[in-house]
Amino acid sequence: MKFRDARMETRTAVELVCLTLSLASIFFQIWILSTSWEAYFQGHTQRLLPALIFSCVSFLVCALTAWTTGMSFMKGMDEGRTNTYHKHTPFKGD
Amino acid sequence: MNEPIQKRLKNKFSALPKWAEDFSIEANQDKNVSRRDFIRFLSLVSFGLLTGTAGVFLKSFYKSDSAPVSGVKILGANEIAVGESRSFTIPGKREPGIAVRLNENTYVAYGQKCTHLQCPVLWSKDAGKLVCPCHNGAFAVEDGRVLYGPPERPLPQLDVAVQSDGVYFLGVKSGSLT
Ligand code: FES
Image (cartoon, rainbow over all chains, first blue to last red; front, top):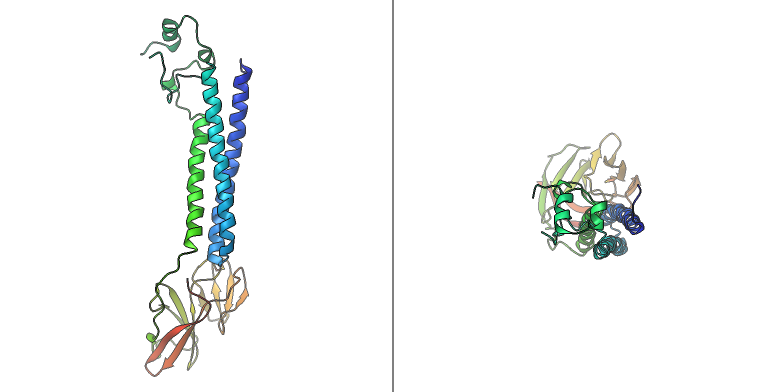
């Protein structure tokens, strides 16, 4: 894919990195949740707090990626390089 | 509103904005989920998973306040033959138990939830042990200790008394019910 603007290319790269990170965090959290249940049933309740902490960290990673992509989108908008006619963003001219 | 976007933009701006070069389709024609939206959705999923994990953590603090009630008859006299078993609800608890008649006057009873992942254990008369079909675990019928398989803890053993009119539940002898 070839972009006319290097900054657009950077934004796409940032989004792809964030997407990968989010997906990895989600899979990690799914694993944590199933392991937590297993630990709970087996009576290893001391493992549940670390599991909760790791799940928290994964959520923070996801939230951070959402924030980062949002910020990079806003930045692009400020520079006039973003499709402001996007369905979530009212078109100022209309 | 039905005019092509390029034409509408030309009417509004003197020069075509930069974004219109990169995104040349109408937003209402854009049905794809953007990467940005998808990442936001993933954050929501992540929050759901975090809530689930927090739920398991909080559940570990919850202790059922219902105590087993002793002195309750769980089996009638000769209700089961020697070498047979019967499931029952542990009096005062909403939990299943399993009683096995080993010989004329000897009964043993255990909590029926496997100590691995809580599947109900079953009495295998041929093998002479309590087996869990879920992950092939087994417990000794004499004392509930683990014979093989993934369980790490013995089954909770229940105290029972044999009377002339049946078998009575007295309490939990060892281990703990959930
Ligand atoms: S639940 Fe019994 S062996 Fe896994």
